[in-house]
Length: 319
Image (cartoon, rainbow, N blue to C red):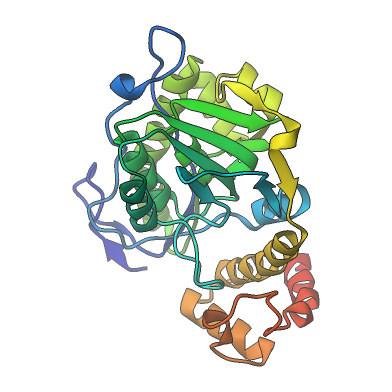
């Protein structure tokens, strides 16, 4: 197992054969019961040297496909940032929500109130933290609207809002850093130790946002907890319900989301079986029959047919 030395909270090397998918969250509350720009917390920790890859678990993609794919805002203005993809660069679509893109959008919006529309299964934990840190620095109020799902790394971003609104049928999901690692018991122990500060940062931030005891937060994270709109409000993770007529279903987007989610889940299944990420992607492109095409065209746009991979994914998951 290879090693790395990128943890700001530990002096000894840590394992690099690690795949991480997770969430971290939001600001403390002001005197009125809601956070504001003056009470936003300090930046969340990021590793000094990122030699980790981060994924959302396959079952989260399944949940997103079943319950949230294609959900969009009915209307949007010129001060809105949309996050309807995975967090971090997305190999399979050429898209993804990145800190660089969000910073550019905020710059274009300027010193005005901002709305962030979220429907994402998460993705790269550390990219989510970076986006959270960028949003918390915005000088004007930030309103986050959870349109379908804010899971894993996407829930980190959601917590950057001064106000968080969520659909009644939408979900917010929190869990611990999720990893796949290879090595002996010493490597595994080092992996757990390296991840611990980031899990604790999540606990502290969620507790600060919700006012709930850190022990309850930790238990919810241990259990990988999905919260409906009303539950999220009851537990302090959101402030208000979005009206039902604020959202719509984009059927074309729903179909595209479902198709590419199958590929993302299959990629992770291959990596879970011990394959390198680059090899998994090459294998999937080969099976698909058009190597490299995934980088050139969006699945579902008519240029590519992904349907032949569905049976393979079912076979992998059944083993």
